[in-house]
Length: 297
Image 1 (spheres, rainbow, N blue to C red):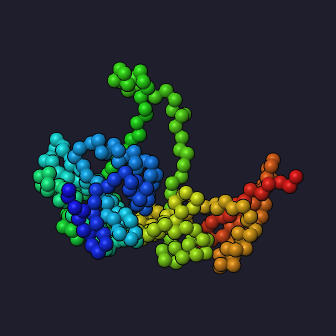
Image 2: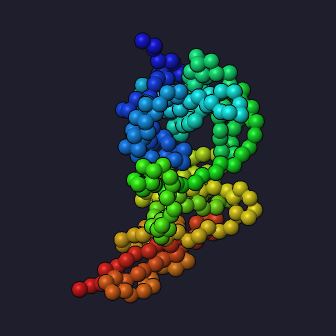
Image 3: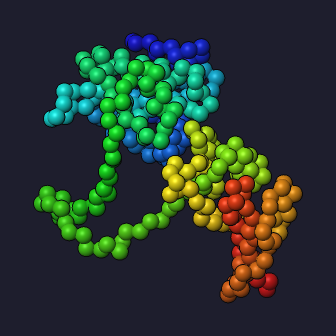
């Protein structure tokens, strides 16, 4: 039996198993691709039935899974076969410890064992850290490109049987129903991170080059400097829903939050009153508290 490769003191590189699904989902979410353990488990089972790819994890003896990598073979008409790193994530707390380098080395060993002459990897141009990482490992930039995506409507059973694609008949069935992330422009990332983490008390998730991420009830908040002048503008107003708006207002004010208006009634509805209060962050972005106060019986 092949022994796991060593990545460094206390860390091994081994094949991914279904038992890693929860850890892999958490790491994928860190990178910006939210997933549940159930979704990862389903994908792992599908990949297990397909040949031509390999999945590795870096496991720390004290902290558990610290990273994962997916490598696969690509056979195309326009080029000779090559191996491609389809996914690589290292936990934010385990970076710069050689974990990513060890995972890439495992992918390269896998590729050589299958006689691939090259390994390729794609990375978002915004990930400056990833660019520096791969260049340091000897990878060269060969091109920049757009990635196009199109969601396909599920074919009806009769259409599947006839092997034809049906015409769309109910376009109104489609609708966006979930916000995954909201971006806020900031000038001083360190100062803004401290405000959202320490003053507002939001759950800090992780940092990336020039970015900081927070969780707000399942919706991720991304702080970052504008990449282009046309994006350098105040953000839309984010409304934080709270139960006791006066108590939250007083708590935030005691932490130094700068309110423009205190709690006040905006509207009286059939079964509740809508109350709001407005404040600004260090970059003058407007924020708000909102509360739906039940009417007294």
